[in-house]
Image 1 (cartoon, protein in one colour):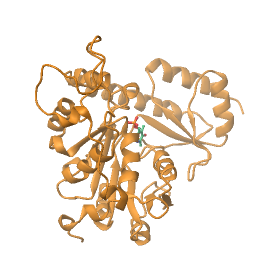
Image 2: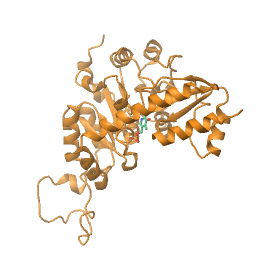
Image 3: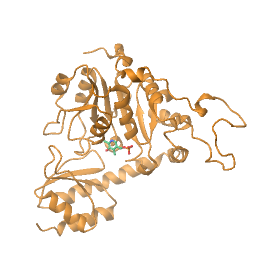
Length: 350
Ligand SMILES: *Cc1c(COP(=O)(O)O)cnc(C)c1O
């Protein structure tokens, strides 16, 4: 086993980023309190949204860090976790030279971010149980494979990646390992957050877009060592999280019960939806889920998809995705929405 404490993170950072002298915004050069701000060319006649936001979102990070049991300096906040995914590729990968590793079928943004940044994506498929082939992943790594993306629970398959497999990957991979926990609040498996101190190459992603019900405000989180977060802060756009989003999130976080209540309602609906889907003869398999969606396999995914569209119900067609032939991904809705889906599906004739 590798001794991760000895890992040199800066040796993984792309050379042009290592040399970067970051933009220093008006609001980040001055620290302290002042009465008069004449430093950022803002319009003084319109308060309060005339002012640039806090570039480091310190209030919000403080609350999030204390909820998660880490340091404020171990938190990055972004314009969705999609921003964090893009920053990770940009910080660690040298264009036209380095690569990321992904394990399809998985979330599409890893490969899109790689493509946008001229970074190769080496794909090592999950096995038929949608679990990683740890040895295959570790055996393709080389000096160019800078980042490995693990999505747990995985989208679009809905299962947890087994913890011991995640840990073998984090321990055996010599680059950065990202564990995308967008759906962790729905899962019974524990978060990798508690292992941040142990693994300096670990980045954990979470988001306000799913269980928190705040996809519209675009707020994602990355948790990592202080050193990695400092690289995020150098590369990110200076004002990447706007004031309305920061205020809204602070407000929502002050009411601690909403998350738990929503999650338990959605899980109850998921259980009922699974039960109903299992009664439909043309559904070959209802995959078990650790998320707020359910993957199903059918003989005629395209026909069912088009039929549902014609009835005004949109699900996600994953038929063309590796290992997902025949599959549709269905988000758990309200009881009324799920009931409508089931009653329409009962009327499907192929
Ligand atoms: C939805 C989703 C995200 C997106 O997060 P944003 O915070 O909305 O950008 C990230 N990862 C996975 C696996 C997702 O399914």
